[in-house]
Image (cartoon, rainbow, N blue to C red; front, side):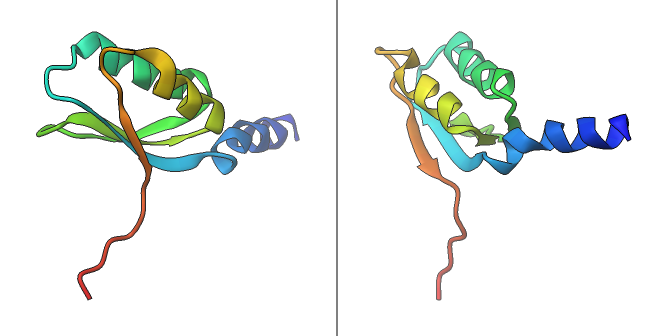
Length: 89
């Protein structure tokens, strides 16, 4: 019973998470990217994809992590948007 309760409680942050895309300007240091990803993980979110051609990642992140990422670096402001389905039709 404790295992089930722990599993359910462990999923609560992800249930309250937003699916987001985070991109940084060219030239953003790796340390700024790592700090943003650590912020998501520390808040109970998860990184779902790391982009190789652009400086960024996608994640399921709680609102608190999104707010923290958006104010972390004055020199390298991230662009944060909701992940969504895109169609050409």
